[in-house]
Image (cartoon, rainbow, N blue to C red; front, top):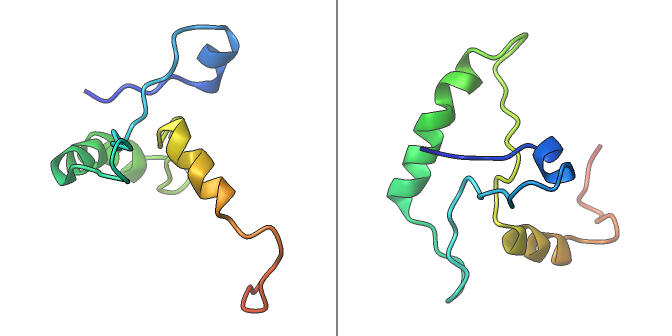
Length: 84
């Protein structure tokens, strides 16, 4: 079963949220393919039947350490190849 607490739970001071994707950061970044598949399968119906179009909002999708690592390596300045 996949558990993800909402931002409201965090704001209320409840237990820390459990990341949806259990990524092991002890030796680089490791994600078990079976765990990833189960996470996707558990959320697929919510995505497919969302209104007014298929979409999904997932709080705590990544462990905080992985999200911070991505943010730390995100370009701070626009690149010439960026298009809007």
